Length: 199
Ligand SMILES: Nc1nc2c(c(=O)[nH]1)N[C@H]1C(S)=C(S)[C@@H](COP(=O)(O)O)O[C@H]1N2
Ligand SMILES: [Mo]
Image (cartoon, rainbow, N blue to C red; front, side):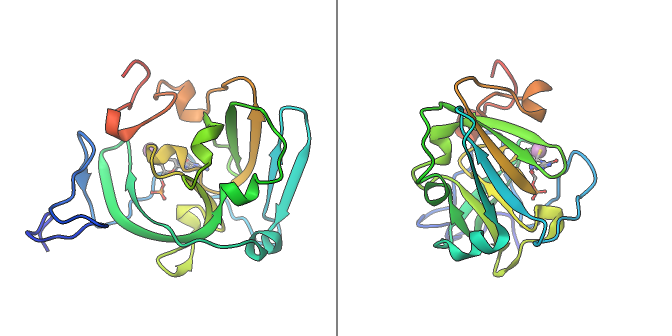
């Protein structure tokens, strides 16, 4: 199969898909992790949201599955320049998770079972832009890709889509995460090619 075949139909597109600047199409699903893959059983999995006032909300695996589920089909853009179009997921919208969380915070720091962190503005988690995803392509999410559950925030570079998500800390201040401290862009919009700090 060619990389770009004539008549290829992306999601809702009539012509060959447009990729963000500097990206190429891949049909694989590469694995990129900063360290070893943690083994998180669903019984041990929980997501904790902490507000700037210190209030905590916690969802067990069973709680997560009891919430309304969505099946987003989204394009992924990795800062290492591969893009994968039309990926199919199942999970819970952050709009649902944060619905009853009282906060006036502007920023979120996402924490993971492997110690990874990433930061983003809280508004980028809302309005149908982000999910806690636990199925990929109709199957339980593979451990290497963040199973049992990962953050999916496809409008930003994929390093923001934290695998093995364990917590979200809401804050008035923007605290850089793992890659952001190492010189990657604080926001990471692929369409503006915000790869590194200063881009
Ligand atoms: N917890 C955690 N999440 C993570 C990472 C990681 O090392 N640990 N790597 C990030 C990076 S740099 C990328 S590009 C994507 C890769 O996701 P994938 O392995 O499913 O392709 O996960 C992101 N989320
Ligand atoms: Mo990455």
